[in-house]
Length: 233
Image 1 (cartoon, rainbow, N blue to C red):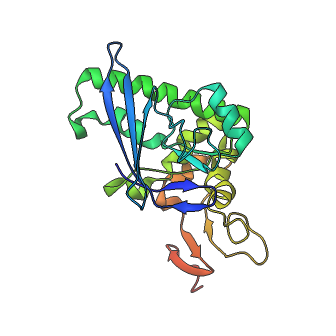
Image 2: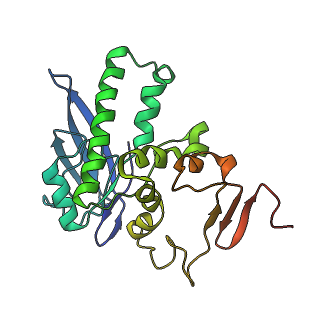
């Protein structure tokens, strides 16, 4: 696994990988390895799926977000709230693994463990929201399911409500990427990134998971999808 570690003074390009050592009780002891641009290595052993470490310190100062947060303790959530650290859960990934274990040839014992992780992830999102952590929106879904990333919002809405789920992908994500002055809300002077939904997503958030229910898409004021031909009418 590799990606970018977001630091408070800017996005630092850090390569990371996670290794898992199975424990006797069926849990995993995780080892996180980080490598910065200078080739410096930092390793941490973790007791759950939350990266409760920072680079290069040990108290989370400078960290902007935790991604793929599936297990979260209250003390960690409160510290995240205190320091303004965002949570970016990727709930759809777990749901897909549980719903379609045959895609990855997962044995029954792995599916059983994934069901436990799924439950823990839901509890973690609820906890983060209750504590006041900014819950943003992300997805590790790729391939043929990329067109259905809106399902992440449907899953999240069951936990924190449709309004907050939609905000997580709009206003909260804009804050996370430090672009709230340009995107995230519909205001004069901001970029016109807008969608037209066939229905009220606050009442039926599942509409956002169906591309057929989003007939019109504007990106920066330019029409990029017009299924009903409204632009030419």
